[in-house]
Length: 608
Image 1 (cartoon, rainbow, N blue to C red):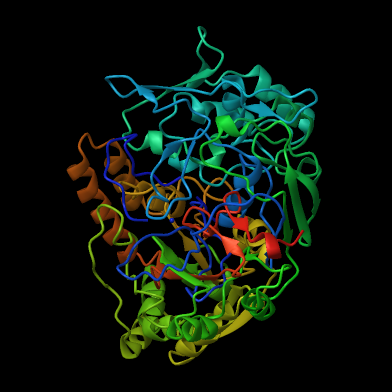
Image 2 (image 1 turned 180 degrees about the horizontal axis):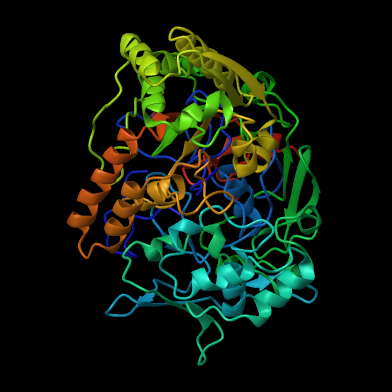
């Protein structure tokens, strides 16, 4: 999940990348082969955004999907479609504009301006705008105290945020705060009491200004200001202490400081947003909120959604977590269909997960040699082909996509059946039986499962599938390490994009390959552990200059691949459809879809 965050901007003086979630793996099932996560620019782009005309207010935006958000809680969600929904009702300290070519330029959202950074880089101050209010009764100002509360809740003992590895090592006292939090009973009363009664030294309210939050870092981290765009850093209303974070009960009482509020939520079925009367447009430069209502229907299927969007009926405006199938995407692309928007990802999406702690086959997947053998057995070209071909899916053979600083191209595992067989025999694992976890709602996921099944059959490995719903894939399986340790799955597909941009290698290695922090506090779903990789992560994050850090990230990339922690497939281009009545349909890599808070509809066909 993804998540997602991406940061190359004037805020930290790094040049922006042209055009991701969360961040964590998202839920796309489109022609890009997506199994989730954010994006960027690989040299191919077909943008068909309908940005002309005079914006019109009103109407209902009908969004169609096949699955649900992970959570409505902005401090906990780590899923690209969770981010896309949160854009409507939750505001961040910093975020990204829905402007073509500028979707990864970090801008102040709740913040009054750029962060105030001390000369030694250890103190960062952010001031929240006056006039931003919660939709409480009566509405009240969003404060720095709310921002501190939001950060604290990310390591709650019930459902913690999965991307803590990005910032946990740097915020003074955060690890100790979370260690104490882990001992608290996972109920609303105990959680609220701990949050309100326990100090976090690295995140405090400026005693001279209740609108200013002060972050104290244990070491300089030039990328830290960019992390402040993560929804995890979103302010949190005190009223949310009445509910367990990310719980079903909390979802029904979501408090908003954005232009919309949750009118109703029927999990895995519908999610409806209406205007938030407490929102003041003058305080929000990133969300125009043209439509009156947003209705997300989550009960569709990939093919029917593709067909409905092409008809441009008032009941089908945009996709939620569903793009056209790989076959349809290629046909639409070849036909130069004006309703098809294709923009590239900064992502490893999808990749094959290896369950390092599976007890199946006498724990064979714990052996580096076995994972290496499987990597040689897999045919990346075939996997790319079933996802729509190389135009939609440029190959990726290592951890860091080419748009992220520090990336160097190499391929340790060219397809080699004979070598794979020999290595499996040497490791005593020639007749393995593996369970592959996948999402049947995605035709690409199904095809990749079948392709991997055939590839591994050629080296004597039998693969059976375990299909699970999109809504359960991460929350009930990958984020639950007990499922991995019980051998519920051996192989799977996931996707990942950076939580910020440019100097963002940490946002791949920390959440995915740091073996000291495991799910649900990270997205290291395969439970990979390596002292060498951990050491390189530490050295790179502590490096005093960028060139040294980038060299260390390059070493970490090679170390991860030498130990065959996973099998990358592509850095894909995302293919998404939009109905003809939709205007200003700007693709946002952070969300892996369009920005619902900024589109407007043709008044003659506005669904309402």
